[in-house]
Image (cartoon, rainbow, N blue to C red):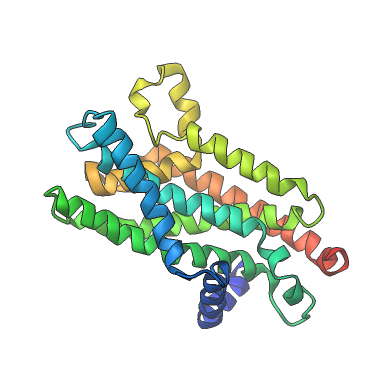
Length: 264
């Protein structure tokens, strides 16, 4: 079944991309600036953080890296993670008309949402590289590792989205629950703070969070210049959690799929 899905996924790339482009444009349909808002809003958020922490509070560098670079390296992957999960949760509800088409593979709808979030994320990766250049940091070979972490984010959020998009059809409160979990997840992930300030006995629990692996992976890529295999235990923990989520998502989606059309 997995091999069949992979083949189908690869063969339908153009179709998925077309749906993702349509979804991205639909989000901002009717607004004056249109899709530009997709890039403006997160940019303004980063600029606000820069002004508050760098200019206002005059935050000290972290590991000799300007605080805004240290912060942005984690904020940008977090934007992708949270946006993918939130939009992926509503992927099926937002496209209810497609669910009733017998020949349509509904399982690609969360993928469409993740691709839609990816458009903005790719822009911000370039924006992050530009920020490092402004501060005098030249690109390195480690930047290639970004593709690995993009694959990690894709598979992790896909597993979560398959579960949540299936359950939210039958339990509407799931959407609110996910929004609350994302808020908790933001503060439980060391984005604004270094793990070094957390008591030793709690660090292990925070490292179990897959998002920790992803945001720290971006910092390793852009700041600390470490390859992902230099953290074997964290890598094994992340992939164990991700494979578990994908397996659970596949099982739940398959079990509930026959009832989608009836409920919608």
